[in-house]
Amino acid sequence: MGSVYKRGTTWWVKYYRAGKAFRESSGSRKESDAKRLLRLREGDIVRGVPVTPRVGRVKFDELAEDVLTDYRINGKRSLIHAETRFRLHLLPFFGGRRAAAITPADANRFTLKRQENGASNGEINRELAMLKRAFNLGIQTGKMMTRPHVAMLNENNVRSGFFERDQFEAVKRHLREYLKPFVMFAYITGWRKSEITSLEWHQLDFSVGRVYLEPGNTKNDDARWFPFTEELRQLLERQREETDRLQREKGTVIQWVFHREGKRIGDFRKSWKTACRKAGLPGRIPHDFRRTAVRNLVRAGVPERVAMQMTGHKTRSVFERYNIVSEEDLAEAARRLSKFSRTV
Image (cartoon, rainbow, N blue to C red):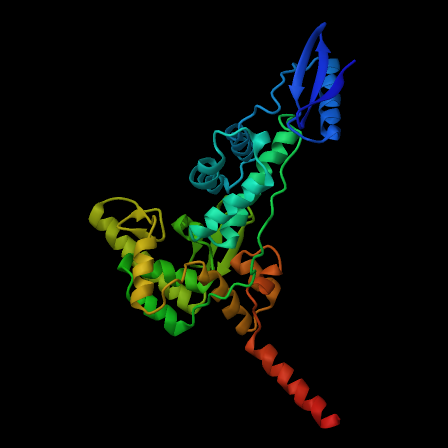
């Protein structure tokens, strides 16, 4: 029969396995947490699960690795982002520490440090979510009994970055030649950067007039296609001609629709920032093309459901986040208000 007892301000448990006594810290100041740990340990003993009194000694590094393992097992596309958040921010601050010793005050200090480094509330919240996930998995696996409260920050969830056509053309003029067709495609379709860089020629059907994304190449794993507009067809036909010319010169096959001398387009953040600065639009990001494409579709009278399908947005919440209201909606509201005013 096990027991719980207090040592200083921390509750401990004592239990027996094969006649040998084990003592283990719950890492908590609450007796209820110690009792829960004792029930867990006694249940493990009954089931024949090896019992190791490690609660209170588990390092945060181990919890972080468990999160990444969970991402790998489930094939989550955001694995690379999770790895980056742990490596650059969470592990430098919490690494090497016993997880049970991390308090809400420590989480707040982490938040303050990230704010001082210029991180946005959105960025910090993504990192705090990883911190919470680490502790939740620790509890699920029996490595932790408690988790600290992690306060999230308020976010302004309305995105306001849009490109008017003249603004887009101004930025495009300052980009390198190989990037101009790429950003033109992004401006028209609103597709994600990774979806465009991975686009191959076999995904284009010039006879039908559409470009197709296979299930494995989209964020939500759903296939979708975008019909050729007149401008999009002209863009892709020019890109096909340029690619054919380059293939003849190099004597090789180029699989990518958008490329840099036949090679897949990589990171172009530096070129992008320079072009935006020269165009007088500092701070703009390529993701603004997604917002712009959705707004353009709505302005053109495309039903929201169809616009969502074309750009790859899963839920209608995008229209609230992007704060999209079509000019026709506003004009119709004005007409209705005028009609109402004449009746009162």
